[in-house]
Image 1 (tube, rainbow, N blue to C red):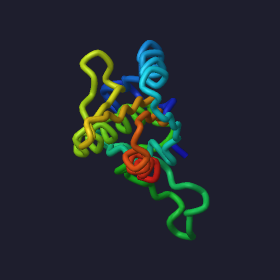
Image 2: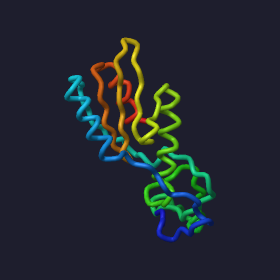
Image 3: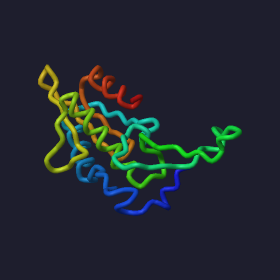
Image 4: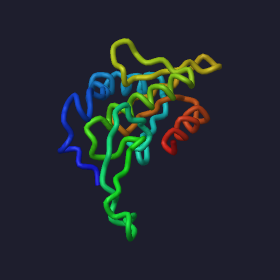
Length: 153
């Protein structure tokens, strides 16, 4: 079990801040949806924090289900973040940002959790990120289904 409460700043982690979408960005998106008759979907990314790579060396005791005779005192070195670690939300955001930019999305200069992409037909797809929840708005259903694949990442 991860014991994030035992982590010490500058030893076990350096940075924990992870941006979340600004409420005014959500209101603007809702106005765009109403004005341009866009479709809106919401999705939740499964096992969110398991996608972030750790920058620090973190160790934890073995989960009880993995302990075997003669190896009960072994510890695990974590490569990926887990729920409960202080840096997990930040590591997830960094991972998501890297993936979404690789798909040619741009993030807003005013809100780092607002992403958009101009589609071939001249329409836009908008994506707002709030930790592990996303709002996706577009007229193009196929572009939105591509984004839903991120929920399976």
